[in-house]
Amino acid sequence: MGSRKCGCCLSSLLIPLALWSIIVNILLYFPNGQMSYASSNKLTNYVWYFEGLCFSGIMMLIVAAVLLVLENDNNYKCCQSENCSKKYMILMSMIFSALGIAFSGYCLVISALGLLQGPYCRTLDGWEYAFEGTAGRFLTDSSTWSQCLEPAHVVEWNIILFSILIALSGLQVIVCLIRVVIQLFKILCGTYSVIIQPGII
Image: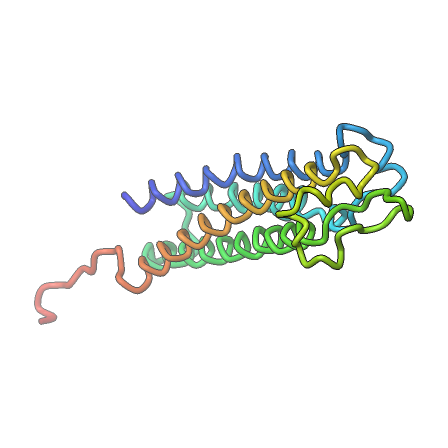
C-alpha cells in the first residue's frame, strides 16, 4: 500500500516538471521576448530538437498519465490469475518508467549540449556561434558575453533556460529511476502473499 502511494506521488510529480519543461522550451524560441528571431531562424540549433517541448514535456505527460492509471486501476485484469495481472502491471510500469528515463535523458543531454555550445548571435563578424570553440569556458567568463550584440542578453537567456531544462529533466530522470527501483524491489522481494494449502506440507 505504501509503495503504491509512493508511486502515485512520484508519477504526479512528473506532471508539473513536464509542464515547466514545455514553458521553458517555448521561451527559448523568443530571446528577450522577441518573436522575430524564431521566424528568421536565428536561434541556436539545439532549440529545434524539441527536447523540452516534446520529449521532456508532452511525452513525459503521457508517461505520467499511464503510470497514474497503472497505480490506481486495481480492478484491471489481463489474465485469469490475480497475481499474473499484478505482475503485468508492474512490468508495464517498469517499461513506461524506462521510457521516461529515455525521454528526460534525451532532454538532459541536448540541453547540456546547447548550454556548452552557446547562443547563435550577431557579432562583429556577423551571425555565428561566438563561443562554439570554447568548450563551455565562456559560462564562467561573463566578460566575453558582450561579443553577442544581438539578440540583447541572449547569452544570459540561453544559460538560464538551458540550465533550468537540465535541472527539470534531471529531476525527471531521478523520479523515473526511483520508480524502476521500486518496481524491481516488488519483483525481487515480492509484495504478494503466498497461499499454502493445508496438506501440501
